[in-house]
Image (cartoon, rainbow, N blue to C red):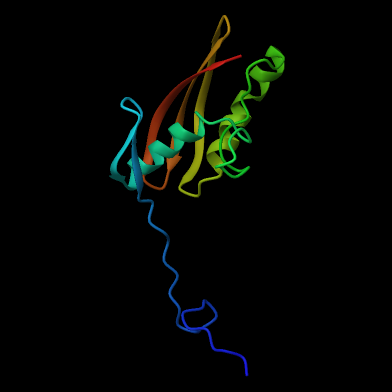
Length: 132
């Protein structure tokens, strides 16, 4: 006899609810975790982490998390690929609907990027600097 699984998604009448975006609040200035965040603040924190973490560099994260902006690449390639790398880093979260109005300014070895992040909780402007 095959055991019956209770609570499986195959049962009729099952309601699928989106998961909460509640997560731990990071305090980068003090290097601590302090409480929780949810909603737009949780997505802001995701954007900060995704654009601060090099993809494939840390075993704790899956290969889907982080960015591929690696200092030391050919400068022309890095500048051409930077917008795509940012979009791909943020596209892994289903709360992020996209980015728009991206501006790239280069001074020396720094690329300053400004763009709007579109999320299910609204939109805001982000500014980041990357070594190229």
